[in-house]
Image 1 (tube, rainbow, N blue to C red):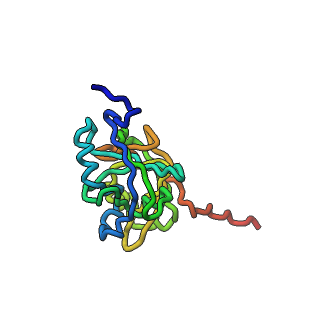
Image 2 (cartoon, rainbow, N blue to C red):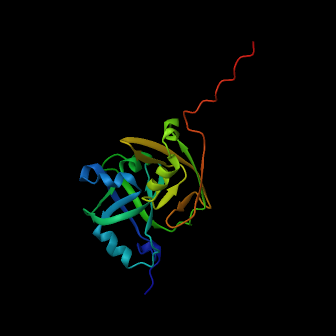
Image 3 (tube, rainbow, N blue to C red):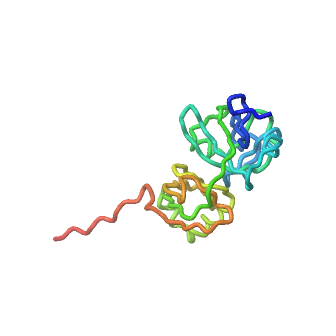
Length: 197
């Protein structure tokens, strides 16, 4: 028997709504260093019956603000009806603790290019910002244009905007050679030209 999407059966799609909570509320600070979420066990059961691609990637959507982002999943141990997210991701999506977020499985193309813009120029003062960024991005599954990711280094948090991604506005960065380009930091000021006497 075949059911169409009108009857709640969505074929190869997983789609659920959850109340979101920050990682810090559950003593999981390691979540802040990447883009992975923790979902309930029921999500794993639903996903395991679908023909989805690995690694599992998800689209997150805040209907109240129309903000969308993407993430990977770390484990399926959250309480039913709840999703645990990095706090920086909740900030990106303008989500407060306990807000509703819609989660659906996503298939993203492999990233070939991303353009990043640090919020502050002190990120470029780190001895090797590219190496720090590469190390941080190993904890990420995907990047979404319009997001600000957080890079932690030497007890400091640096925020970096994703201003462009190719070949799509959201890309998977697992096992891919991705060219990275930097735009001038948001607080960058052109050096003043010396006044002619």
